[in-house]
Length: 482
Image (cartoon, rainbow, N blue to C red):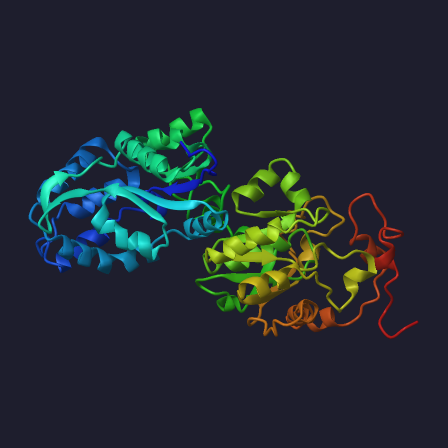
């Protein structure tokens, strides 16, 4: 309990294996201990199988009871040698922290919470990793020592199951941390006592029993290799599964010509920007990005996310909901978090499909959100020019024409080099970005076209007419004329 007159602190408590890391830390630590001469040079042939089962199914009581015997195995080891091995393993483990875990740790730190690692792994083996990863505190199993060597005992709690919960409770009492306002993250059913102690429990990559328990107790479930809200089934997120279907031959009512897909980065953050001509544009972008086999986080209008079924699918795919009416910075922050995690983000800077004569304006006009994101994150901006998508699914149609398989329209997609930005002015860099997109369009897309009444009608939603739809758009005239 906090002392009278003091303000209790809050904490964010993270488990290690299958939570911060996608699997077990054991292989890395074992390799470091072999290198230090603590373990035989020849690896136990059963070790890969044991860790493989752990990675798939999580902790089980027999293996954790065997882990408790590690104190006896370590009897006589010099503490200094173990710490040397741990120091060698630390950067390897730190690099293996899952991307959205890194983002979440920083968010908790900025919120003023104490960031804590709570793990069964022996303290001396894991403390250098915790320091390298920026944790404020470590709650871990401690081995007894005598004259600089381990004596075969455990000093205090074996930090697993109820023992972990007890160790965290004792630490919180000593540090005046309010667990009722704190967060905890774990994959294991055996950490249920810890999760139940805090006000904000979250099941991360939950094992089958924790998944069932989390459902019953309404604890949120998430994964640290995908954004919050993206589910996984058999270890695969929906977008990755759908990528297998994002192949041109599976769209017989469209012909695709794709150029420059190799300019999409294979790894690391990137902001994909494209012009907007049709409801089919996200599909065209997705088919192009699928050639890299990388998921992308689309920023989309709230109307998409609020629609039945489609909205649920958009959220499951990691889409980011944008409500322009609120002026909130939350969507850009969510996109920045995705970039910080190494993901790609896709934006259509025009915001919406141009209407009326503006649809035929060769000067593309973009909003500054994409460029603000680029200025804040320094992620490369990759332009993409789309042409012909309006013939597949014009704004005037409620559904695409999927029956036109005899003479399907041609959709051309060109990916350009990263836009060279000055990073000094949002408007100027936005113009550079839109200019880079424009250069990827065919010649007819860079020249003024006087539309017919029929063409104008295809640029507005069903049931409306171009007349009076948007006075600002209708006021646009052909450049160079009165």
